[in-house]
Image 1 (cartoon, one colour):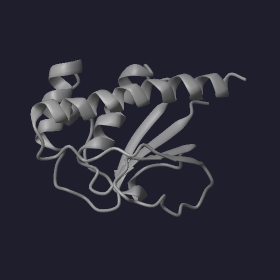
Image 2: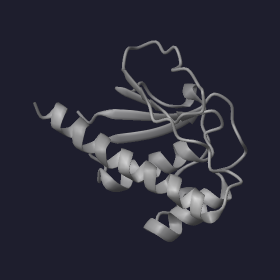
Image 3: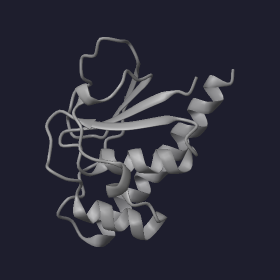
Length: 136
């Protein structure tokens, strides 16, 4: 059974969407990745879509859309992105961590891509740690 992770942000429009896309990409689907928010924006952040497509060739608009916590299945891990959102109360227990990332919305291209790079590093470390634990 594949481990499941949810990346949670307030609007589920930027950092959590990037993390979902990169988790699917780098885990080669060995980890089920979801993203969700506590409230919603109408669409994924346009800069996030453009830069993730430029850097990784991933079109988030093809397979992703803003979702609420109730729209995703139960997960084994919850990662909050650093938007001062407390881990939500869910009807199941799971491991939780916070990545403490500032929202890059409205920043320069360099700052935005720097945040994407930080997410990539954290996603890769999460994959290594999680797959190692699940194989024990």
